[in-house]
Length: 186
Image (cartoon, rainbow, N blue to C red):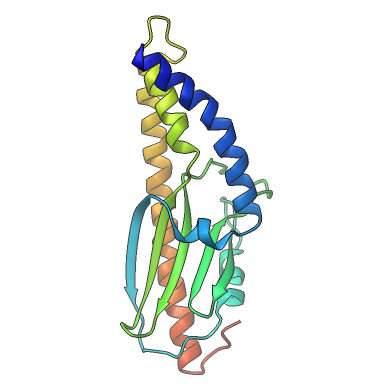
């Protein structure tokens, strides 16, 4: 009985979270992009301890390079904190459902750039709904499907984690260039 209640609660909560999350993503809600279940934290030292300057223009330009995946887009929350995520619409050869959104922090006190990846909220009730449904007498999703889905999510996470680490490296490079006046910050 408890498994059925958990399944029903998660099944109802999943579409609600998807809609709420879509609104928060579309409006670049600062609170949403700076809090959540952190599943990645990566720091990259900057060559210099540069003054904090807006670098979102340069990051957006670097993230729009031709490739097979969706572009990353950035928005500044202040001079040293940027939210980022995959762009919603352009169709690319390698499309996937992202599992996390990003936060980029320029940390002049420590001379580093930090990227944090926060899990998309909707993934939690969806995964719980599928996992608990596989335990029901008449499962909506058989256990092998749930295991397969978790493997796909893990692969997407690893792919996104590599992209987020690349964001940290690019940001450290762009930020260092802006400090040495070798290039514009935006």
